[in-house]
Amino acid sequence: MPLSDCHILQLRKIEDRRGNLTPIEGQRDIPFEIKRVYYLYDVPGGSVRAGHAHKNLQQLFIAMSGSFDITLDDGNTKQHYHLNRSYQGLYVASMIWRDLDNFSSGAVCLVLASDYFNENEYIRDYSAFLTAKDHLKSTTG
Image 1: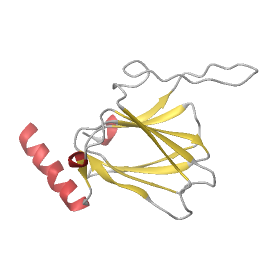
Image 2: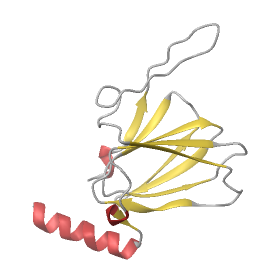
Image 3: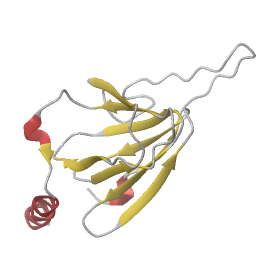
């Protein structure tokens, strides 16, 4: 997938004097069915998370509290995003390398995923990622 397939989604925000609410419904608010939800928290200062790509998995990253940065890489281009709003999510398509860093104190990163955990779905070596991208290009045109 090209990096242009990844983008910030504005999620619905229902404002109320008692507090705001943001619903997220799979295949309505985001372009996939949600099969797994997890979150990152208590990330020590200076730590980098992710450092991998997924063969088929799609994800949505949301800063539920605090902020963090995500760098996306499609093998040709890199794009940096700063997430700090709980009503915005970064949609990440398959075959995109991702690195998360610059976590603020108390940051919570919520991730919605299109499939269940499968270690075989991960590409954890950047050189292998580039090889897979080249192979994908040669087989799809």
